[in-house]
Each structure stands twice: as structure tokens, then as C-alpha cells.
Image (cartoon, rainbow, N blue to C red; front, side):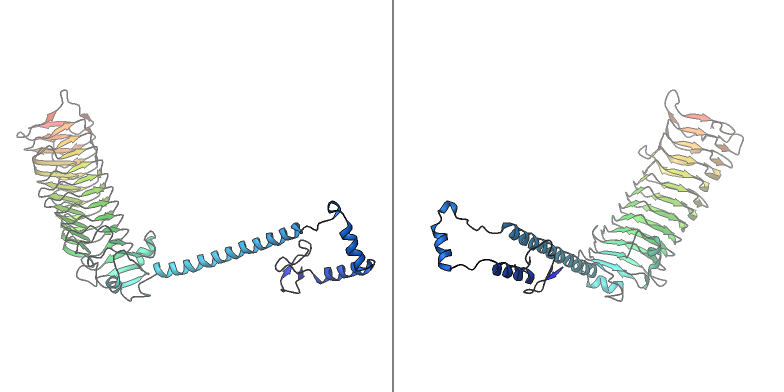
Length: 463
């Protein structure tokens, strides 16, 4: 490498004859040119001029620019310019990243000591990020369409450690002021209060949360009144109430999808309660190990409600009286493609239907298996109802007395292409598959296209 005496820059003398930065020749080149001049004959100036002018134009040698040298200089300057731009770009990206981090970085508790203070300071469209920790407060979105999230809502350990603690009483998180789907609660543990309340026509998104150890009369985990939120991928666990240990839905049409609703307790509807003209979608949830002191271990549907209950796993729920898995009263749900298994109740271990006289009540493509009733209807009990039962599999359900798979009282069901296999009733005339009261009417295809096999003590018993 050679140091330029003019500009001080270093350059490779093997690649460049002159300094590519300023065009200065090297000191060695200057000395060599001077030496070459000394070695030439002196001559007379006038003679040299005369000799040049006497030459014909065609013989004259016109000195052309050294394009090769200039090209090297240009190439080098271009390289330097590209490097310079790249450096500027890298610096710019780094600065942008720093500013971006500061904009979307942890807001609580770095900038605001409490979550509510951050909400109060936020505007629609803002995102508030909360670091792990215990926040002993109750919060209200106050109608703001903002995103409130933990540092990593997809990491269960972060969710477990980012806790909104209601301190033993009152609603922990409120959406009461018409918040839209742009309002998001994502990745928290909500605990020790009366859970989450959504009302006033609000439609927020509630996802990736753990909602646990809350206590309330209605909807200890989540209570929804006259609203349609999206409730997605939450764990709703160990909450306790009178109606709806896990979720309570009244006059609402929410989307409840992908949640695990487990180990909740209530007088009625320990998992989910759906009442008063509600039409929610319950899709692909796991509703398990919930316990009701009276009715509806897994789900209660009542008072003119029309939910779609599809693709759920409803298993190992208990009701002391009726409806271990699902209880339906005066409503028209669509219950399809669910696994309803190993639930227990006095009547209707799997499903209990009462006073729902409409064939719009559809029970189709479900697997209803290994449910137990202490009195009647191991898989399904119905009274004063007219459901359509289509393409279900009733397998290994048991009743201690009547109707191993189904006990039918004062009802007019439509039964099409169902499978009844290895169901068992305890009484000699109990009807291993179906026990049918004398005031009931079965509507079947002719010939009967339902399939019966290995039911004990018999397939169908009609009074």
C-alpha cells in the first residue's frame, strides 16, 4: 500500500498508477519522470518547435488522454461511493430499528407504572406492551381500540408470568364502551377477581390468555352481555360462579373458538352458559372436567337460544342432576361434529333435552360415547322435545336404569342413519339403545336405516 503525499489516502500501487482519490502521481513516479528527462538530449527549443511545425498533420502524434488511468480512478470512486451509501444505509437501518424498538418496546412498567395509566394515555390504534410481572389492578379499555399485549403472547411461560391480579374482588378487565374488534387483549393471566366483562355492544378480540381463579355470580371467567367478541385460544380454568363458571353469554353472538375450558365450577353451566336469545358459535373448543352442582356440567343452552356447537371435545364433565355434557332447554342449537364422551349426570349423561319441540334442533355427526346416567339416558335424555338425530354414533354409553344410549319421554324425534353400538341399560326392559315412553313417537325411515349392534339388554324397548 502507498500513502498519497497530497491527500494522505492509502491505495494499492500495483492496481493504480496514480492516487485514485485525488489523481496525484506518486513521489517515486515524479522522480522517475525527472530522471528520464535528464537522460534525453537537450537540443534547442526553437529547433524542437520548428521540427514539430514542419511535420505534416498526418504525421503528427496527437497525445490522447490516458483513458485507462481515468477509468481506474472512476471505478475506484464508484466503489467508494457504493461503500459510502451502504454504510449510510446500514446506519439508517440501525437507527430506524432503535427508534422502532422504542416505539413498540415495553411500555409498562418502563413508561407507565400501571396498565390503566398506559390505557388512559393511549389513542386508538396504539399498542401497549407489558413486561412480565404482577399488576395488582383492574383495567377498563374505556372504548379505546388499542392492542394490549404481553411481550410474547405465544409463549405460555410469558403469559403465566404477566399477571393482572384483581385483588380478590370486582371485574379484572372491562370492555363496556363499544370497543371494536381493533381492541385486543392478548397474552395475560387474568385472575383473582370476577374475570372479564364484555358489554355495551362491544366486539373486542380476547386471545391467548389464561383466565383463572375468578369468582362471580354470572360468568366467573368471562361474562358477555349484548356483545359479540371473538374469544380465541384462551385457557379458562378453575373459575367458580352461580351461572357459568367458565363463560356466561346473554343476548349475544360471540365467536368462541379454540379455547380450553376446564376445571370450572358452577351451580348451573359450569363450563359455558348460553341464554336469552343468544346465537354464539362454539367451534373447536375443549370443554372438560367441569362440575355443576345441578345442571349442565359442560354447556347449558336455554331461553330461545340458537348456538352453533361444532367440532368441540366435551368430555369428563359432571352434573349432579341433568346434562353432564350439554343441557338444552327451550332452544334450537345445532350440535354437530363434536366428541361428547365420558360425561356423567343423573339424567342425560351426554346430552339432556327438555321442552325443545322443534326439528330445527339438529344433533348430527357427533360421537357420543362412554357417557353415564345414574337414572336414564346414558348418551341422551329427551323430554318434550323433537330433535333431528342424524348420522351420530352412540357407543358404549350406560344407564343404571333406562336408555343406555337414549331415553325418550313425551317426544317426537327424527332418527336417521345413527349407529347404536354396545350401549347398556341396567333394567331388564331398559332398552340398551333406545327406551321409548308410550307417549313418544319415533320418526324413522322405512325401512329403519339406523344400525344396532351388541346393545344390552336389547336394542329398542317401547312401552
